[in-house]
Amino acid sequence: MPRHLSLKTVNDELGRLGHKERLAKAGNYFLFTGGAADEWLDRTVGVRTLGSKTLKEWVAEFKRLKALNEQIMGTVKKPRPG
Image (cartoon, rainbow, N blue to C red; front, side, top):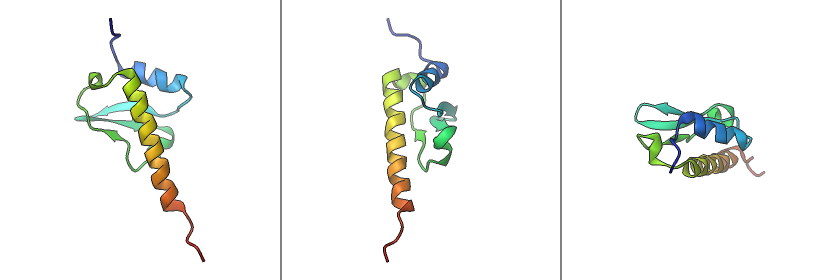
């Protein structure tokens, strides 16, 4: 039987994996806050309910957004040649 998913469950798992960022509810979507996520350009997940994703999917979404933002920020911060 699947465990009831809560923000605490997701955030405990992120913490167990060594991440400072946390998932929060905001209106009709969720977003990652704290740690490096406070500087991310894209940190939102467009789902209305926490149960729209499994714990594994929330962790994967965090990793996807982290990688995306690292890529974006790396592109922005590259010095111009010459």
